Image 1: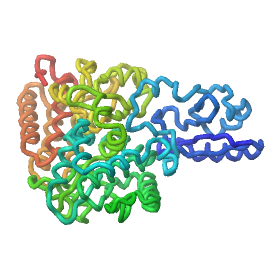
Image 2: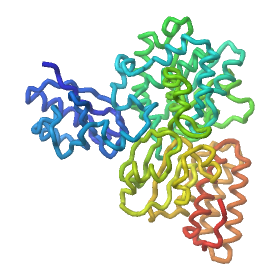
Image 3: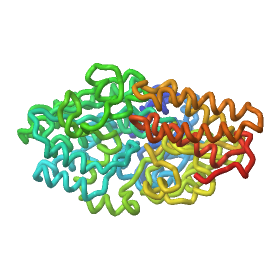
Image 4: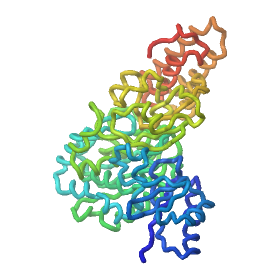
Length: 521
C-alpha cells in the first residue's frame, strides 16, 4: 500500500505559528495508528491567517486543513483527514479556496506545491525550462525576450529590466557580475523571503539566465541578516544546483560558467539602495554612491553589473519558457505581467496575492484581505513600504499601474500594502517616517541626514504648537520636504516626504489643521 502524502509548510511564518510541532505530531500519530504517510515540507501558499496549513494528497486533489495546531492532529486522524475526511478545520480542495483561485500565479505558480529544495520537483513543474530555452538562443535574443516582455524592476524603481541587461551585455569587460538585491526591508513585505525559502531554484534560474545573456560569470545574492531560513535554503539550493550542473564552470554543458554565492547583509535599510548594497558586498560601509557612473557599467568591484531584486529575477524563467508575449499579455499599459502583492497591517486575512497589474486597492483590501482585523473602517493604506504614500479612499478604485499611481502621488514600490483603521493618527505615522529616515540614513547627503532630523522637530511643532503659528510651520515642512525630494542622493531621503506629504494633504485634521488648510496632493 502506497503512503499518503501530507504537506506541512516550512515557511518562516508557518514555523512561527507551530508548523514544526504540527509536523512532528502528524508523524508520531501516524506511527501510533500504523498509517503510512510521507511528510513533505512544502512552502506556504501565502494565506498566513490559515497557517499552519496542512494539505493531504487525495485522488480528487489536495485537501486543506487550517490553521492546525499540534493538539488538533489526533482529532484530524479520528475523522480520517489523511483520506480527505471532513473536520471543522477542513477547507476543501486547496485550489478551490477563493483567495487562491482568483489569483494569477505566474511567479508563484509552484509556491506551496513543491518541496522547495527538490530539483526533481522543480523540474517536474516547468523548472529550468527557461534556462534550457535561453541556452538554445543567442544572448541578444534572450535580452530581447526580457525587453519584449515589458518586465520592469519589481524592487520599486520599475526600471525596464531588459535595458539593464542590454547595457551590461554591450559593455566590454573581462569580468561581469549578476547581483540580486534581496535586502527586503520594507514594512509589510515578504514576497522575497517567500521566494527564497519556498522556491529558491526559481531565483537561481533567473540569475543564471541573466548571466548567460550578459556574459557574467559570477553572481551574489545579498540577503538581509534577519532571514536565516532564506539564507540556509539558498545555500543548500546553490550546492545542489552546482552538483547537478545548473551552476559551475559549464552550465548544463554550455561551456559558459556561472558561480553563485550568498552574501549576508548587516541590517542596514539603506543597503536596499543598489549602490549602498554594492559597497556592503565589497566589505565597505553601506553608503550610497553618486551616479553616474551607473552600476550597469561600473558596479561591483568597478565592473559591469546586472542588479535586480528577487521578484524581477524570479519572473524571468517563465518569460523564457513561455515567451515574452505570454507574459506581456498580463497587466495594463506599460505595467506588464503580474505583481506579488503583500497584504499586512490591521487586516483580517493577511498574506500574499499575485495579480496582474490593474487590480484595485479596494479589491485587495476587502475581497482578499477581508477588511480590518479590528472590524473598524479602513482609514488609510500605505503602499510601497515606509517611504510609500498613504493612499486615501478617493484612490482605492484606481487600477494598480505604475504611471497611474505616480500621477496621484502614490507608488507601487515592492508591492507591500499596510492597512490602518480609523483609530490611526496620521500625524504620528508621518512623524515616524521622518524618524525612520533619521535612524536609517547613511548620512552622506545633507538633505536626508539633516532634513529628516528637522522634519521630526517641525511635525512636533505643528501638532503641539499654537494655532496661530501652524500655517508657518506647515509651509516650513512643505519646503523641507521639497528640499529632500529634489536634493537627496537616493530614494532614502528623496521618498521620505511621500508618506509625510500624503498624510498632511489627505488627513489634515490629524495634525490639528482644519479642512480649508488642506492642499492638493
